[in-house]
Image (cartoon, rainbow, N blue to C red):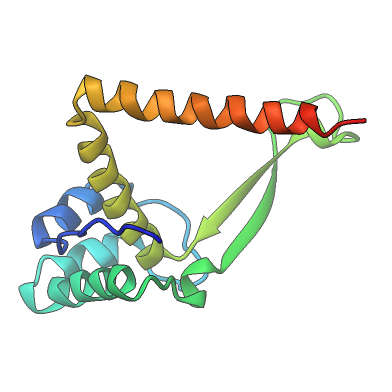
Length: 146
């Protein structure tokens, strides 16, 4: 049986912190919303609460909407290359949905804070469980190999 940990609701402050890390000049993703536009509308309490509600609903429902999963891949030639005959001379980039990326950033920040507050003893306990699992996996794998 799975044991679930209670995930506290996101706050407006977490979203303001998350969005501050993004450059206004970034290329638009598949939803065609720029970071500068998102930063402008998120200043209004009436709009930021909608983003917070969407993020909280994603967590509550354990669902990541399909439009957040859409991306655009772009291949850019690297500068100052003698020849462009090989794949090494190109740089792929992936453009993601801006709103989805903002929510992912808020989730990532939350997980980072939780990770940083973990007690060393808890970390060592989790590490020992992980190592026991790896040992058991290899023991079973080699026991049944012919």
